Length: 150
Image (cartoon, rainbow, N blue to C red; front, side, top):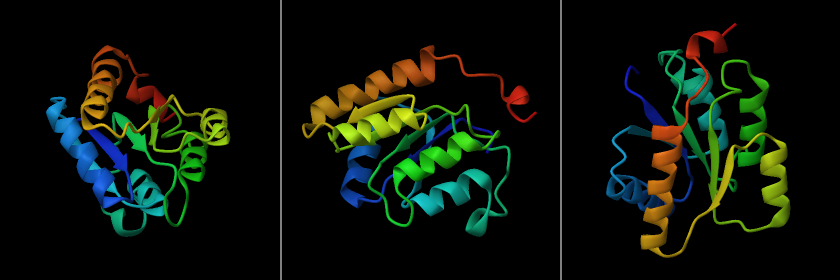
């Protein structure tokens, strides 16, 4: 993939549609790739399993990661992302409905860049997505990609 894209890791179809709608409403122009469980997210990132033929250099600009996922939960996905030199510097925003203190602490302990609770109200959610866009896709300066693979 040559275009900059966002990886959305979300198993709930309703939350997926809501997030995609909020991204469009927030005028996020990036392509969105959706994976629906933790194992699929890792297969996509590391070009394994059903994604083995995918272009390996194509890494997302941002990962939006739900915590409550089938196969591998979001915390395990986050830990594996941070353990690999190819992905350890990718921005990961935990985007979840969980307000459990342990989930928040574990997310940051395992390397989350941000933790955002999904607001129930669509207007609030759209505003949160606009702020995500502004910070992570416009203002934030990521590490140079060439140096990440050394």
